Image (cartoon, rainbow, N blue to C red; front, side, top):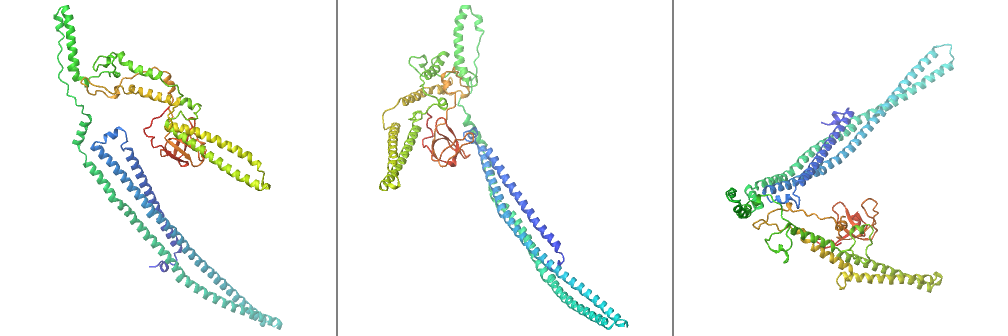
Length: 608
């Protein structure tokens, strides 16, 4: 069955049908696109859900992960993450294997359909033109025949009239002959055009139109087959991920089978077992004995009875009940001293004696505090020392090395400029017409003076650098002040750790840190110097690869080639925090700088 023979007169209907077929294909493409979006959104939601319930590092949940049930749950979250990955694969395959291919195929179909129908319309227009020519030739032939007939009738009337001259009759006869000749010519033209039209019509309906309609039929069948193949691909894409999804589900099942209630119970015992014995029976205390005695006996007896009862409570009953009795935390013990009563391991201590060491240490810390500028004063306009003595040793060494390198570069620039001017002076001396050598001499003297000054600066900074690196034994006052501060800080360390050794009556650990006694200190000059947040320590250096304006709030402008300090690494947002000096710091794009982190940054102290 062919469209060319069966549907030779259905040009308009075939045009509508083929357009509908392309729209069906576009509808299917839209369906696959929305399915791919659903898959990718579902995968994203699954990943976010898995990430939300993942165990956080350095948290209580990380301690709970030792239970088999928690491990199984974490395995389930990991498997769900892989499960989400398979949905992403489905989305990607549908986009590349169906959407992209069908979209390109639809464009080809539209172009082919447009070409075929353009050819069909052109054939129809040609047939319409041939038909118009046939109609025109036919009307002309008909008109000429009627004119010839009228001319013949007029000649016959003139020939039968005896009153008409012979000349008029001859004229009418010639006119009739001309009309007959014109009718014969029109008849010949009409016959020729008719034959041509019949031939064109035969070609149109038996050759051109069937060929065009056959192309349209092939195009439509190709579209239908391609749609079927796409449906198979749609199913195959889902079928390909089924085994992997099955493995994910098998992993979840396996993790569920690994849950062991007995093992978790044993883990609970190992986590919370205190090792204490259960409390014993409470002894009966008889308070009626004092009623039967005299006043003197009672006084003497009560003192003994009270002593015994106190010994009983503190020695036996209270010793067994102490894990369940709410009591105030004892103040932190002071350091042992030969002249202090607290030197005795179990000696009694009064509240005043227990609090004195903490206050003494705080007072010692505040009175021995070195008089240096705090970071707040530096931020508010304090000048940075030329030798960078306000920085920690490692940071100071880097600053000094950086300064030495910069000075050496400046010296090299001056030397290059001096060499160039020297050559220019020699050229001027050989060729006076090119310039005056005296005009260059003054500039050479200035450059030489600059080189000498820079070399003096280099020697000065190299001396400080050698001192920091330990090549020189001398230490300046700032270094001694810093050492005094470090010793003071180390001396105050027992204040924060004085509550670590807490024991029960039988010598074992008793209480958690949540019950520590709070120590209140009266605000002093110590608070005034350290009430502001300390600036971040320098963790490395960076070199600007490109200039950056830093117009937005929180950013800092840098020049190309400028070397600055890094105080905070890029946390994934594309910005690095840097510092130019103690007053200027901000963020710059990470791609604009080259970062050099210190290897010994981790664990290093932050010096004031």
